[in-house]
Length: 412
Image (tube, rainbow, N blue to C red; front, side, top):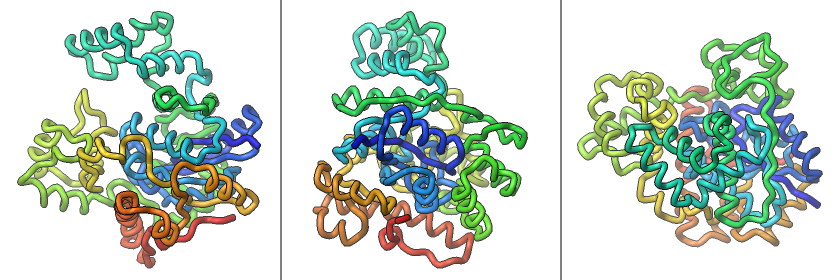
C-alpha cells in the first residue's frame, strides 16, 4: 500500500484543501493520506481560528486517514523551521512514500532548482548573496537575486520566490534534500483564490484567510457554506455559536502583561527577537492597544507583519532562542503525537508503531510509558502552550476547559 503525506494548517478547512487531498490520491495512487497539521498556533504567527481537534475532525471527514500534530515549537516558526519539523514528523513514521504540497507554480522543476541552490549553498551563491546584502537589499530580495545569478534560466520566474505556497514548497524540498529522504515530492497547483485574496462572495473559490476575515470582521457564516465541505462548515458554525473561534487579539491582555513584566531585561532572549526588535518593542509599549495594531506599529521594510507577530507570540508562549540550538529545532521531534484517525485506517497506527523511529503518542498514558525525561518535558511544554489557547476559548465561551493532554484523540 502507498501512503502520501500532506503538511497543512487547515485554518480552516475549505474546498481547496479537499481538492488537494483528492488530487493527491489521484496523482500518486496513494491508498492512505497522513496529514501533519499545526496544533493551536500556526506558521503566520497567530492562533488558529478553530482548535486543533475541530480541524482534525474536518480533515478526517474529508478524506484524511490519520492526523498528526506538528509541534508548536515548529508550527509557529519561520518557513524553514516549520518545514523541518513537519517533514521530519512524516519521515519519522517510516511509512510515507510521497510528500504532496500545494504550490502556485504547479510544477517541480523550478522549485527543485531553487531548493538545490539553497540546500548546497555553492560559493557563487554565497558571494552573490553577500554582494546583494551589502548593496542594501532586504534579505529575501538579496537571496532571490543571488539564486538568479546561479540559475539564469529562472530570471523571468520571480513568482517562484515570492508566492506563499511556493516558498513553503521550496523549504519542503530543501529538507528532503538535506536529509537524503526517500520520500518522493509531488506538487498540486493551487486553484481558485490566492492566499492573500480578500473575501468575495461572488468568487468561485476562497482562501482560509478570506474565511477568517469574513468571520471576524463580517460575522458571516451561512455565506461561507458553498466554499467549505459540510463537516468543516458545521465545525465553524458550532464554534461561532459557542463563541469559541479565536483571533490574535484574544491574546492581547496576556501579551501586554508579559511584555510589561519583562521590560526591565528586554526580549532578545526569545526566538526571532533581535536586539533591535527588542528595543523597538520597549520603545513602543506605551502605544500598545492590541496585537494587530502593535504589529502594524512595529513592522518595517525589513520586518513584515507576520515576522513581527511571530516574534511577539514567541515571547508570549515562552519560546526562547536557546531552543533553536537544541533538539527541538534539529528536525527530529522525539515522538509522534496523534490527533485523530479513521477507524477504517486503524492499521496505520499499528504499522507506524512497528516502523517509526520515535514513539507514537495517543495520550498522556502513552507518554508516561514511552518517553524519558527530556522528551517528556518537551511534551509538557507543548501542552502548556496548547492549554493557553483552550483557556482563551473558555474565557470567551464560558464553557469548561479540559487540559490538552486529557483530551482524547478524534476517531471517526
